[in-house]
Image 1: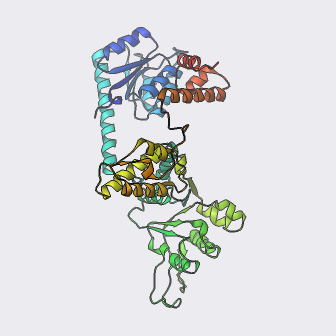
Image 2 (image 1 turned 90 degrees about the horizontal axis):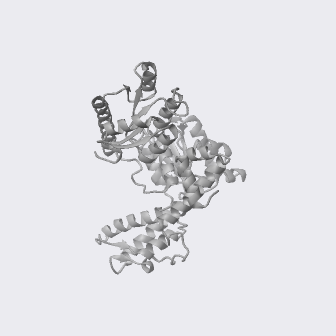
Length: 453
């Protein structure tokens, strides 16, 4: 596997003559250099090297190893897989062993022999490549539990990482978000990423079932429990034993059933309607709602103790209008899917249609967008879906997507980031540069270019 990172080498050495000698000795690699901890961290973030050679004695106190060890820990925090080769003096074995204990790949005594250093660096690169290839193969063998969800938005990606983290536990999860934001997709992903994926995933919509039937749907009933109960029937909770039960629109659960659900969550046993036997059930509960349950509890419409029992882990799902880039990303995916269903595999969206999709608020979220694109693929007269066929209002002339000049966008973003960093560190340039991951001269240049004093 060949990538830019695969052959990127960072040389950290404050002695410029020795730095040039090392770079010359390792000239077959794509090398970048740094002379102190600050510049090394900048190059670490910028070049993302697979291998680093570094001296432990760095400015401002080159006779001490404190800066070197601090840099080693920070580099491994940025990239735990980076291979760090520590260059030490002939009689400095104790610090070399300490560096290896902290996570360094290897150590090398100075003065070094170029052939041996080349061999050590080559072995480090080879190990990094093998580990990267192993991760890639593992990801191919183990399909992503959230493969049904498409997003590029940082906020939504954070939600996905949270789902993956909590999946391995048995904690009850509450998904909060507007209708159509993908709560059931996330709940299924949570189930697939958990140790319960071999069990069933059962979903029940608490708002879609009449109150007089919901109790029997959840808890089941014995034969003869009521008129028409001709046989014993398992409820959704018992059916999901060993798996996951999703209670959608939990905010609409009748108040009379909330106490019974609370008892189940506390005791992990149920009683079927018409029965007297307590039946233990091992099931994970995932609930979802678009309502504010805290506000409902204050109005005595939702039990406060049930809310805290359900809200062990609360995940807020952002609406589609707040997911940067996702409306267009999903729209293109829906076009491909529905065009294939219509046997029109070359369909695409016109530029004005894409801009209208990006600027539309989508109150119905993904469900509304999916229906919109499905209708447009059916009604389109040609392989290009126009703004008229999408059926949305034209985007405003001053919409955020009209100009995608990267230089202008970058200048605005850099200016905001620099102002925020300077404010956070009370105007200290050194700390601001470290916070931004750039060198002090680079920060001064940026401030001058952007008109910041």
